Length: 226
Image 1 (cartoon, helix red, strand yellow):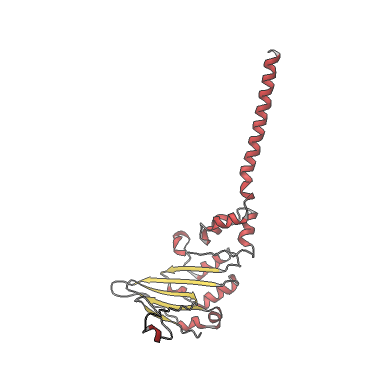
Image 2 (cartoon, one colour):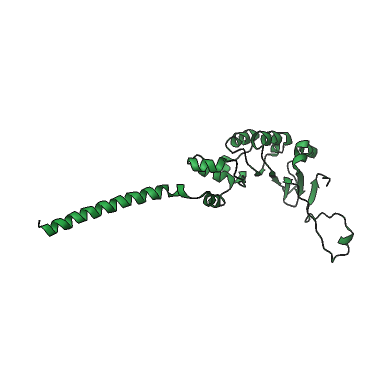
């Protein structure tokens, strides 16, 4: 091998080594680049998942995600749609309590929907769950629904509506009420939100001091003093 060929061979080796080194650097960067994302980017990613999916997919993944999920400075609006997870459905208070131990206690908003177990409409049990596991909860949305069959039969709530009128519920202004339409009966808990409807072009409405619009549904609820 002459001098010229030898130089070309050495240059090729150096080039290959350089490319290999850069490739390793790139691979390392591509592996760790997600670690370099800002928290704001992760918040945007979280918007594409509900609360259950966030915990399931990102919890214990690495220390950065754990800090994001469990930091007291984060106010993530988290919704748990229990009926979406047939294999992991939570249909008893025992299962709900086990599930709650895996959720960060700084939860601010909790929304739960379920059916086919009217025993979950237990005001006292909900008080215990919320006080023990969600002490910072600000808004609570609960929706229990049952279909009405052809004979107009459906499970009857055996509890008393005023069980949801204890000091616990009044202090938080979380209102329990029932809606019935042709297909379903729904028991709901919602944060109290006073709504006013003003139509100054309607002389009849101008004589009203308070107006409730129910959209054709039968409505049963608590009286709230404003």
